[in-house]
Length: 206
Image (cartoon, rainbow, N blue to C red; front, side, top):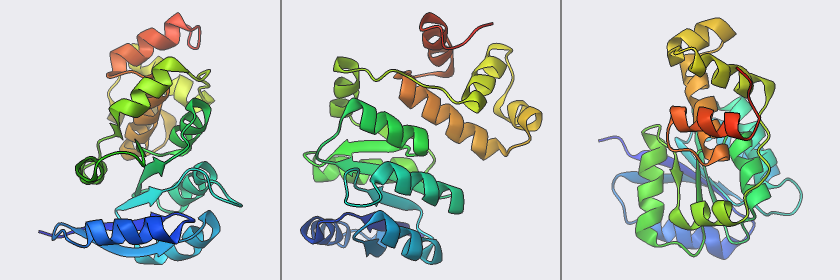
């Protein structure tokens, strides 16, 4: 079995070393590199082609949300897992909107980190229960991009991801990523629930 290629981004060297030690014991995961900043990640990660990028949210200079946005533009097939100590609802929402597909707090267990890496590697999203609770206690004001509104509107018409991709001129994987971001942003567990929440919050009109 080919190991999952992981790249680490955190401004604290001890945190990176701790993750390297944790993941280095696994045969199914390989740490292919690390960076101390968002700027360094943009230089290093593309040539290493990781499957999953573990990204700190709060860093000097370029923060994790902006680094995520730029990396996803350069590396659309890579999946970003936010691992943060100081998660705020708005900050997490910005990271999810930028293309992150998973969020964990640094207080999480080692087994949860492994579970999240595996989930993202197979194309699923992973939001920890602690983060879901944070978002439910302090819900950010959801902001949908025009493309996200178009995708939600298309879902109300019963279109599949492939049909939506054809309509918007983007890839089916691109639609899936947008749907995952929409569901995470709205705190929904399904496409139908995302549409219902968007309508209830007057974010979508049909």
